[in-house]
Image 1: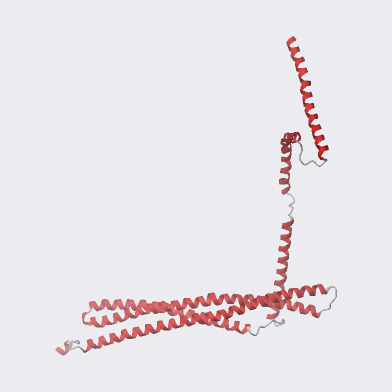
Image 2: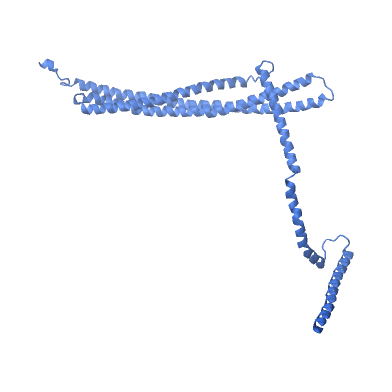
Length: 343
């Protein structure tokens, strides 16, 4: 009992000493902070080491307290969505572009309908319009020529296959019919040669068809796409021109002057766009004309050479066959007497 009381007394004596030590350290830290603030002013930018240590001890508690605050925005996301300023500007610009596009399309459609009904006026380029009409006519004619050439190539291919098969039959009959060996042989050789020459002619026609098809469906088609763009730009230009003319004919006051100025700016923009499209189309038409002449010049001469070579080679070979038949017929004893004559 006495030992326990002594321990209690010793413990009671120790606790005040510990508390006194803690209070002394806190007082010293507070004094150091006051002295530092007094020396450097109220604007504290780098606290002393003791204050930094105290802040490091407090930081775990603050991190725990900040976790619920960080979870708060996630909960708020399910509610009202706040759009940043940049996204607002992008959405506004996109909306303005859609509005401008809708107005332009409406005016263009109205102008196109008025032209079809014969009520609206349209801009006619006396230099470009005839060239476009000639190009459309040439495209139809070249397309028809390409289809005919392709039909000719298909028919020549079928003809060469038939000639080759018939030549094989003649060659087989020449071996199985000794009295007509020469006649069947000559016809078999002729058909085989004509079939082989026909294959060369078919390849030439196919090459001609492919090149003209490229000219019609790629080169001319590209220019026709530009012609469609030019026509769309022309309709837009006429639509804004008609609107400007209507505003110029109307009264001018403080309410209509801003509209008139805006219409003049839109008209000038459409006019510049129309002029650029027209110039691009004019240049492409000139280049197309030169390219068309070069391509057709080469391909037509190649086709003519293939047809002439086919006809000449077949004519020479057939002449040789005719001479061979005539020589064989002139030999004595070729035609055996009939059994009726013998009887």
